[in-house]
Length: 199
Image 1 (tube, helix red, strand yellow):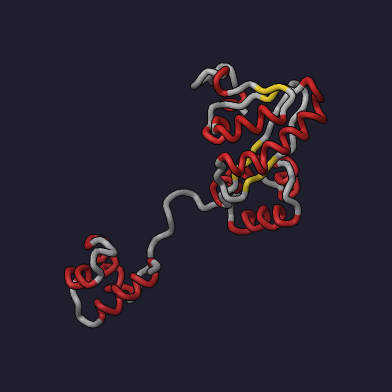
Image 2 (cartoon, helix red, strand yellow):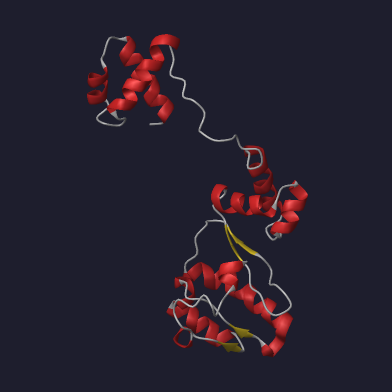
């Protein structure tokens, strides 16, 4: 049941003569007693339950319209940089990242070498396990690594669970020309992989 539906039930029960405690018992704790009392206070002067808008400034950039623009743009073209997306929609890259991560639930992956970046991979379900990492990310990393560095490519990961999974380790050892396995990579090593912490 949605909040509006519960509010309507409270309003109808109150108008039928039920008190806050009886309404609370009838709703079996779906809403707290103080909330029911607050709603009843709103009903008395206005005849309706009108909740105030959330605290803080209203959204000016991450609006529903901006979120829908980003979503439709991604539906048209899956691979697009956050910079290009930000320029096209005319909002900051930080706002684009927030929309992707917080509003749309996307996760992004990007690889880097000395003088170039891989293709951006956008994962729509917002989570990455070993299977998703192997099927959607590693082929892109391999393709871009071959283009950028050829046989001089050494693939390095951090200690995230999808990276240390035994199937991931096997895939990397089989496909990459050179690869640093988890056994040679120290745990909790932000100094050795600064890009994870400063990009």
